[in-house]
Length: 171
Image 1 (cartoon, rainbow, N blue to C red):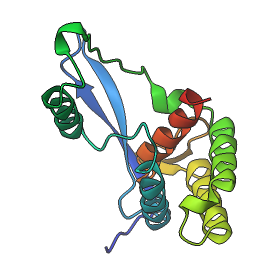
Image 2: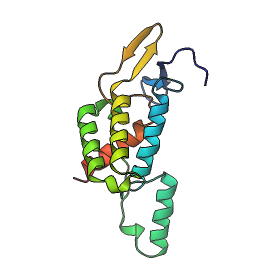
Image 3: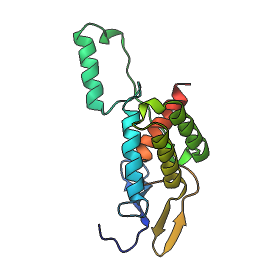
Image 4: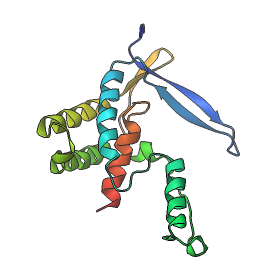
């Protein structure tokens, strides 16, 4: 990819489904300095997250799993209540220091799930640390560094949050 400016950039979109309308900042990291590292970390975290007992690839997979339970008479929908929940500003409210510490401890304690054990654990931890603590982006003709929360726009953000919240929920 031939990119003149190696920084991510931020723009605002409107949430027209909200009343009154709200805005949502979006950071595009494609082609940025840390994009390649973020993609590598993401692929490593995806492999780890897919082994978590709480991991669901998609809502379609959940639907298929539930239908299978019903067909095998392991689940009686007449006695089940289902609900969904969302997190307000989840990424921006994650404590980066605590999340990095929690994930690093998990990786050290679960080296057996990693292809080359200790080496990959250290590379993932260091790569994730670089990506999450060095999110620079352009807004107009100014440059900014994100100081708190999950690094916006980075490829590894969804799996980083998935792994972190799994660690918090399974304590």
